[in-house]
Image (cartoon, rainbow, N blue to C red; front, side):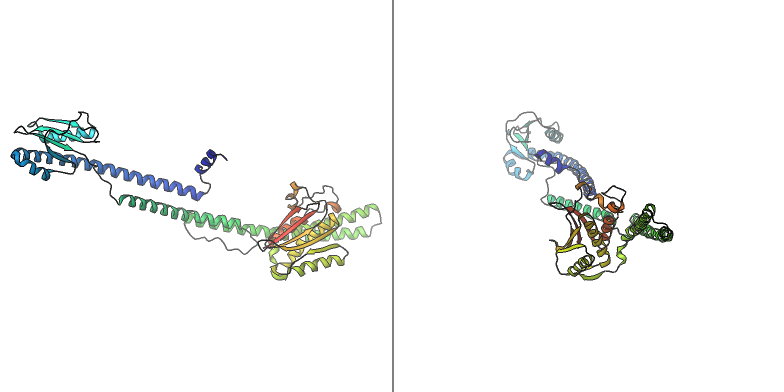
Length: 440
């Protein structure tokens, strides 16, 4: 990335709503504070300038009148008394200068001219090299020259404490803006967290309905939505269970009629079709109920013994299921749901590879990792996620013997989530599939 691109990325609009609100509010408050300070500064500048010029006019008029009336020998003693911070009187012609003056110089010259009046002819010059230094030259009544040396100081010198006050104000603006944005964003963050953790089947705390009316209304709407989702899921299971129950009777009658029919090729096909219909009904209900796997109460099991017992059950029926490696340790889970997950994965491995291996390990985070390994044909990389969807079959033939119902992996994935775990599929190096269940 080039330096220009990095600079543009640094100046880009922040992605989070909190950062955007913070910048907008802080910029608006700082702009308002800056405008207020500028207006006050300008008003103070104009007021101070007016007072300074009016004071200059009256002081100069008084000082020239005093010096004009004093004997020439006593005037030097009075110069220090008449000295001011921005101007002083000098006996003599002063320094040579140029007639050009700034706007401020012309204003000061006008005030001095008003103070002197027409009694004493006066001329003004700007002294080069001395910034805004100005000298006014006049001749007193006895013919002696007098110079008014003016060095305008800042009308409003900045106080030493002013920068600290401005920094304190900036800090208060940042703090107050952050508190306001945090207070405004917190309900939205709580709503987002509740949406991420949404699971109608778990006894998660309801979103609090306190706070401002808009926040409380959004919380009530979210809680109502969660209740409706839970109700719809429960209805789905009940409907499928009812359908399954209602279909069992006609399927059983059809199977009985087929059994008493004369033996023929058509009879065999009919019996197979009825068996597939019955299996599909059962698998559909099992998939719907898999989302409610948390209805089983959690219990503590020894994961090593649990996996060994499952492998022995397969071996007793002549299936090639081996435990490659295992660890001993107790975990809290729903054993029937976990057994159904592993059974579906092992059945898949046996169907496509003829053998299956089970491995139980701990990963770097301390989570239990159960792998069901096979050396079958594997799954194309672009379809590893698709096979987790219900009714998706890699085998596209209509034969249920080879393609299955397409619900086994979907049920396993649903149950893995229901017991607080996750299921992932990976192709193995050298061929085959690794189905990995992570239980934290």
